Amino acid sequence: MGIRQLASELNLSVSTISRALNDSDEVSAETRERVRAAALRHGYAPSKAAESLRKGRLDIIGLMLPMRREEENYTLGVFMTLADGLQSILSQHGMDLVMYASESWDDECARLRRIVERRHVDGVILAGTRHHDERLDYVAARNFPFVALGRSESGGDHAWVDLDFKSAAEAGVARLVALGHRRIGLGIPDNDAMQAHVYLRAWQGAMAQHGLDVPGDYVRRGELSERGGYLITQELLELARAPTAVMFQSDCMAIGAYRKLYELGKTPGRDLAISGGVLTGELAEFLAPRLTGFTLDAYALGRRLAQSLLAQFPDLASTYGDARESSLWPLTLRERDSDASPPASPRATNKK
Image (cartoon, rainbow, N blue to C red; front, side, top):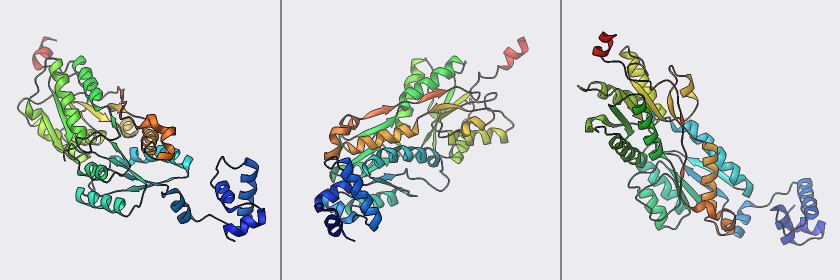
């Protein structure tokens, strides 16, 4: 049965049937229920293609997951929770979420061009922003609705939501200094990651504020993975004057540090203080010792990103207009056992 036959049976206009099936407030609740019951009885479903032509959109939003190599799995847990938050908002408007993953930067950029040019989605959320990010310049030039998870120098004036890495770096340094550390190293992602630029500047500022040196060889860049943290820890411990504490930007890198310390017969929190950065799941609670780091509400963050994107759609701007403003997302320090006071010096030990 088609929509015209359904309209004839119910003695309603085709437009009324269409509005009722789309749950429009222009149709009474009684009529909407009568139409839905008849549609269900006859097995009628509206044409999505026709509906898309009428509305001028597909009701599909794309989430571009951060480009990751095979060994970089840190994104999986937090982004699944974030996606749940996104969908909780999108579903209120009959929209669906699709996620795209890429193993290289070139692949991601090419995929984004295909998505936009073929109009596979109505808008896109771009994660893993870089300091200079050609993806943002591309979608901005095409006037395609988007919101960035992370800041960038690219893309002009656009909507973004970023984790508050600056406050996290400052709080991390302050905690380690309060514990007695003066030699604090830093492990951050490579590949021009914007979060690394923000974290590094904040770390340098916090170190200077506490009157501490910031030697260049204390800053190490590597893969945002367990292997990356493993190699960074090895490099820092090989220095003639090694740090007594290391701040990482993500828990996956800290996990690599745990492995390196185990191989050397050392213990996190006793022989080297480890600050884990962003904790992407509950794994940090099951490490020994438990890992200090920063938690976030990924579900609420997903909802915020969805609202920020939908604010760019004319028919939803009045509902979500305030969410289009760019904002920093809070990170909450979870104090655990991996960043204890530095080991006593040999001289201090002999005095005891």
